Image 1 (cartoon, rainbow, N blue to C red):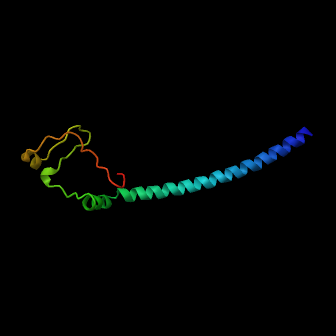
Image 2 (image 1 turned 120 degrees about the vertical axis):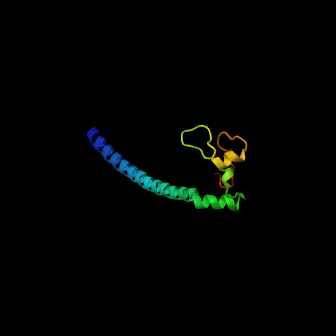
Image 3 (image 1 turned 30 degrees about the vertical axis):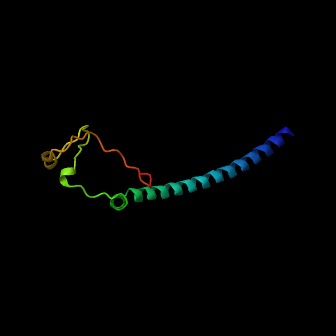
Amino acid sequence: MAVLFAAIWANLETVRLGYQLERVEKQREVLLERNRQLRVERAQAMALARVESIAKGRLGMVTPRPAQVILVEDGVLGAVRPKAAAAAKGPELIGPPAPISTEEGF
């Protein structure tokens, strides 16, 4: 009799786990699709044309003059001034500018 109950329990447990596995697989598919959508949204938000239009339109930024441009070499801690900017004798800048908070959060 105990063997019969054990066999029935094992069968019911197999069915229950099968349903649970099906739910988890559907949830995984939904999450993968959401991840894809978020990646597309992120790529659109990071598009340079969009960033430039927000910077100029909403924030009132303008394209910098050559003397305002500071080139930063990869792997170098200090800033390297181009010749035109060095001739202008502007203030010595160290490090990147502080981030500006926007309505979009970036």
